[in-house]
Image (tube, rainbow, N blue to C red; front, side, top):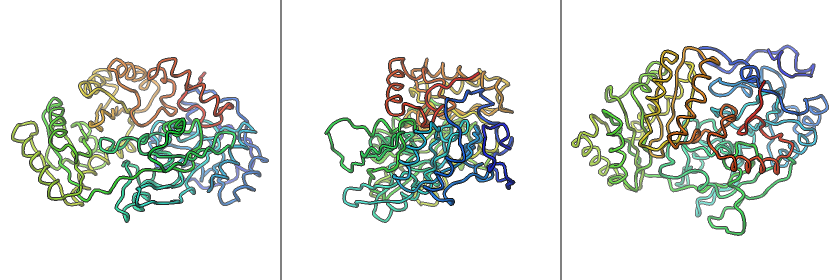
Length: 506
């Protein structure tokens, strides 16, 4: 099974039962290093003495070496990439993380930092035989200050579990993701995850008050502030937010949490063209203003794809474009009345052709499920997933451009996303993943995004899959400064190698 990986330990080849991540139509991907001809960095190899150190530190029950157990840690959520790590470590404390990193740094052992493994750009799984250090047992909620609305927790806390903890205090997490039931807050911070309600609550650079981070050499950096104001020097936390685990290992997070809305309403609209989508967005900002919390767009091809793969259908019939508009506030009557008037206005002015409104939680959740379940279909097909920021005037131009560019190589090209913050999720469904297909798409799609003054990664990060296109997103001076920071904080390059920064290939 792992015969062409870089394994040197006899204990890893004993009989095992096969437990595989469900990878849909085409099964597990080939090893990433083979698919992309990547060249392994100058790192050490895992040896028996290394395992003995980890066993002494963590005990036998928090180390995985059986191939069947390693499978889920070596393959990403959408089965695009596959590593061949021979060991998974599960620390519970910052001190254990510190000792692991210090030891790996001394022995030049590369590390793959992993949270809930919900990443979609190959950032959370190894490329070669990196040691996987999982945060899944670092799941303690340390403190909640109900007066200030600040929660402190370990990096392995699942996003949805944090939100449930906050619910009893009338608070909520300022981040909402489709993967909230499995993603970890440390991974969210490391990737600066955006989510469905960034329009209302902003990104994590504004909501994270402090971090505790372990450097590659094991040194612990305590920036775990709970203060909203602190101008006593550099705000080092921002270095690690969005760094994808390449600069340090996030172990604790201090998060500012807003009051939980007492009133949540959702409208679902059908529209004729994208021009009317933009006009409706402008009107929503004007009329819904302070209660507007999400503004999502879905094209007809996305809806068609969702119907075919996961059985989701539109509750209002078929239209070229759909909008999901959410409001959240503290006054149910006021908020519902405001949304009713808005819906009536856009229908009277023929901005929307049809629409429905939900005020009851079950119906609100049912409409949100339409949007949230579209990515679930990726598991049942071969889909190239892209995540861009674009000027709104050019938002769907890219979808049409790629339909023309792909021609018969694509079964479908479709787009959906967070229109409220300019984030487009472009998807290209193909008959089969191949180098020919990917080479036809990349770097063409990135060049088009750059020409449109957009960003090639809005919220997913660079990971492994986009790392070689870092220069498309940043000028040389910025890339050089990023490299200098990496060299200073991780001089041996053991933290998440082959991610963010371009990797070499044969």
